[in-house]
Image 1 (spheres, rainbow, N blue to C red):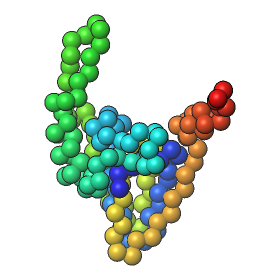
Image 2 (cartoon, helix red, strand yellow; image 1 turned 180 degrees about the vertical axis):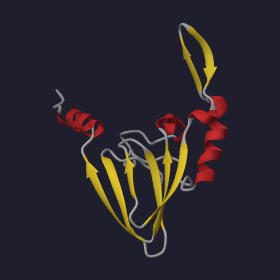
Image 3 (cartoon, rainbow, N blue to C red; image 1 turned 90 degrees about the vertical axis):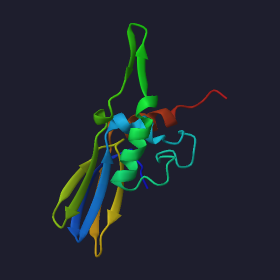
Image 4 (cartoon, rainbow, N blue to C red; image 1 turned 90 degrees about the horizontal axis):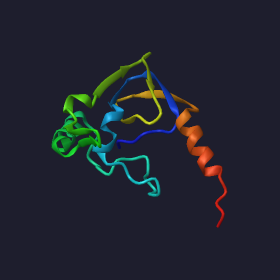
Length: 137
C-alpha cells in the first residue's frame, strides 16, 4: 500500500527483484493521506494506488482541482508534470534511499530478499518532540 515512513530508509536488495513506486512531495495532497489522528495516518486513502498507472490517473484527475493562490498573486494551477512519479526495479546488489515523508509502495518479485535500515530524520525528531509535550488537561 502507498505510504510514507517517518525515518530515512536505505533498502538493499540481496536477491531476486523488488519494484518500488515513489511519489514526490508535490503529490502529497493528491493522494489524500489520512488525518494524523487516524490509525492508518501515514497511508493514502486510495487503496488501489500500488502501481504507476493508477497513481498517474489520480494525479491527472486531481490536476484541475489543485489551486495555489495568495493575496498578492492570481490563482494558478499546478502543472501535472510538477508531480514526480518514479518506478524503480531493484536487482540483487542495488541500494535505494527513500527519504522520510516520501510516499512509496513496494512489490516483491519471486525469491526477493531485501534488508531495510531506517535512520532518524528531522521529520521523526519533530514528531516525537511534539508527542513528548505534556498537555495541560
